[in-house]
Amino acid sequence: MKKTRLPLWKKLVFSLLIFLFATAVLYLPCEIVFRLSHQIPVFSWDSPVSKDTSVVPEGDTTAMDFDSVHYYEIFQKSDNPVLFYEPKPGFSKGAVQINAHGFRDREVTLVKPPGTTRIIVLGDSVIWGHGIVLADTFAKQLEELLNDRLDGKYEVLNFGVSGYSLQQEVEQYLDRASRFQPDIAILGLCINDSVYSSEEGDFFAAQNGGLLSKSYLLDSLMVKIDQVLHQYFGVSQKYLEHIVDVPAQMNRLKEASEGVSWLVLMFPRLDNLEDYQSLAEHKILTQPARNLGFSVRDLLADYRRYSSESISIDPIHPNRLGNAIAAEAAYDALIQNGMIRSEHENRVVE
View 1 (tube, helix red, strand yellow):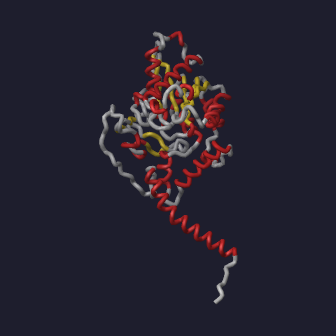
View 2 (cartoon, rainbow, N blue to C red; view 1 turned 45 degrees about the vertical axis):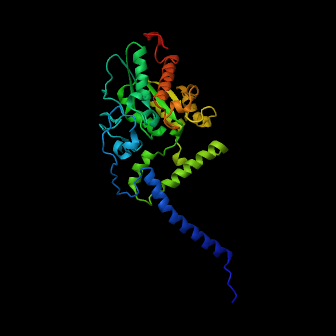
View 3 (cartoon, helix red, strand yellow; view 1 turned 45 degrees about the horizontal axis):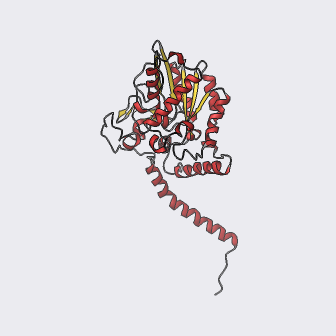
């Protein structure tokens, strides 16, 4: 019997159907594994239960943030649609304590105490202090330097929130930090601040829909592909729903902070510092700030004097020493740029 040959178009349609079916079958388990590994709810009705209910002593640096304390414990959905999520006021567990105003710091008054120079610091998990106790964070080490070396009283308040993009950091200043009457503001930038997506935000976004509402796996892959094409092949970043308009956000800060002196610190990746591959990302984030007259300090040169292993918890987050280096650089930049007068030093800076 002579076999009937299918037309080419039917073969293509049949092949496409098989491909779509195979993709659908593979998608579900892969998406579930990805969500579970990133603590993203699989179903909209998921009610995650903490795996660790123990309280860790304040000085214990082995149980930090998301190893023993989870996204859904530290953060809550925000009424501000731009912030989207925020730390829970009054939360305390392990090495993570959130004050009554909703940021990771000791309790402070909204009104600045008389005779105090108040500095607020914005940023993502690098400023928040992922993996370290509050005393080891950039903000608290800078505060210690200022009060140790200068006359007068200085407060450095930590408004960093893990996972925030530049847009959220700007909104954090406009909606929250500006109410604390800052004299000086420091914006700590990391190379992923130009991207909206974060694991913390994804956790809360997934609660708006079930497994088929969005593919977080595909979302993550598309962002990474976009970044690789841009970094190594010069392809313009096309995944626009994830790319922050850096000049526009810097303009928002400029227009909303009259009378406030700004210092922008660029935190590099902490791996492969000698053969650094992310200078293009540095320029994308810092050049708009320079164009607006903000003081900018790129910390790459400061960190290159040390080995990556000695200053980092992981390729992104500095440890106590890494933050001490950043605090020294910020102190130097504040004096060099006239934000703080060096003649008020009460001892010789070593």
